[in-house]
Amino acid sequence: MKQKLTIVKVGGAVVEDEAQLTQLLKDFSAIEGKKVLIHGGGRRATQVAASLGIESKMVGGRRITDADMLSVVTMVYGGLVNKNLVARLQANGVNALGLTGADVNVIRSHKRPIKDGVDFGFVGDVDCADGKMLSQLIEAGITPVMAPLTHDGQGHILNTNADTIASETAKALASFYDVTLIYSFEKKGVLRNPDDDSSVIPTITRADFEKYKADGTISGGMLPKIENALSAIDAGVGRVIITLASAIDGESGTKIF
Image 1 (tube, one colour):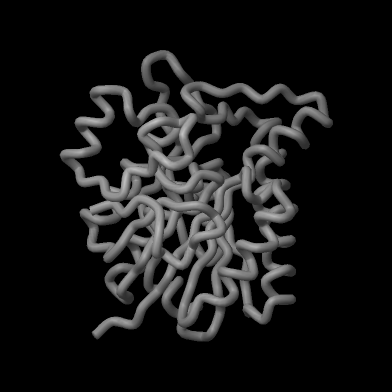
Image 2 (image 1 turned 30 degrees about the vertical axis):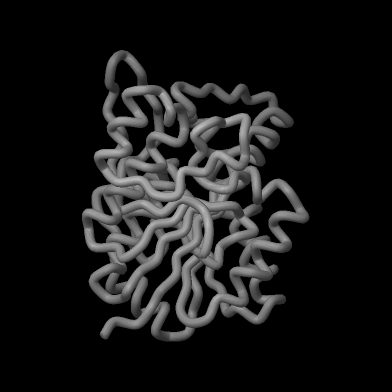
């Protein structure tokens, strides 16, 4: 029987809210057994970019990453956010190690091609994640804390969606562990009505998702999140849950099947 592994992805809105972040790190530290933390940080990147006079450009909720913005996200994701999370986890008794995809070649990607006239710049689409290397770190008693940055093997850092990092990491580790992937953010789960926090959809299958996508119940940034969740399930990840940052015990939220 495989050992259990919990992977928690925390969104940028939670990272920016001190009360929510403090509680999440406390709850994450209390999770028994092996674990991985994956973080975003887009709001902080937007703030830092603005302070430097660099305009943030988005298309469909995704960040356009030119050379100047790549410098910002590398500093913010790989440095400011990542290392502060590592330090705070150490204070909570978790022996954490901050990683980008370039560190020990753990996630390789390629530059997203221009599509429908949109050039996302230095944005990476994942080719492979090294589950064996990650498992060796985990077995050594280390908790990886992964930033949403990858590399192309040619010396270039690439900005990569954090939900995708979470999904690809979970898929790579599913061969080694019984993986639970938790997407934690500022809502209680996937909502039927974005204005009603009590309208959580308890379970979503692939067929449910296609129906909700077609009728507009699910839209915007939630679409790629659920696509990533379903991709993880298809690849052998045991459980995927989308839930509130203060509910990472996995008992509530939306379960993806």
